[in-house]
Image (tube, rainbow, N blue to C red; front, side, top):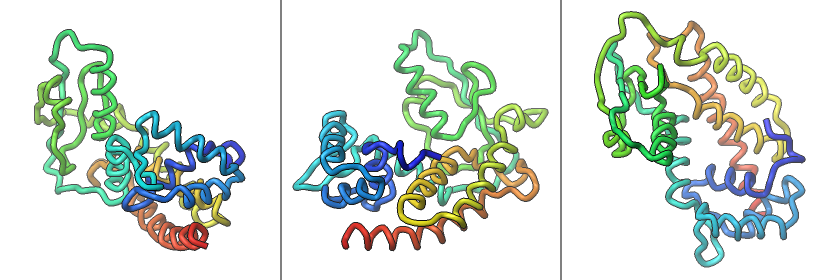
Length: 238
């Protein structure tokens, strides 16, 4: 978890906006978020200007909102809290890279997209996961890959994801949620939980170990977030 003394103004601003619906806040509110971590007003305002210049934020009438690219990140974050799944019939989605002469930027963009779609790479150019998520294949995938539905003869789950590691961290975060005190600590804990949920492969129950903590962490975080957002709102508008 990021230490409160090393949290940057950019990180504080992004986390505040990613947790807001809609992702738009006035500059004075973002300055007050910085105050929670001892970040000076001038430092926050410099960060805001740089983020606008970099295309991370859009400024309009004294308010700052996430750019379209970061709105997509927020959508993934929201999906990780309340995933859209369907019953699993044993089928796996397999995406095999078949495009030739790909530019390095295309390769990087595909890898980023595959990770966001929660596919794992079995070997270079071969991505797969159980077909239990409800979503569309973006054009970047269909332009570079051939898509196949299949059933591996042996379960490749252990080769693709460190489920024990994810579960251990989820249990630790559950404990931390119950111990968090104050706005600064709660802010950092909230960000840590959301990052961890983004890394959940969202596998069907048939492939998960017993006592998988994913659902429990989400429920615990929802309760925490409800109370924390109320306290943060009071601080920002106080």
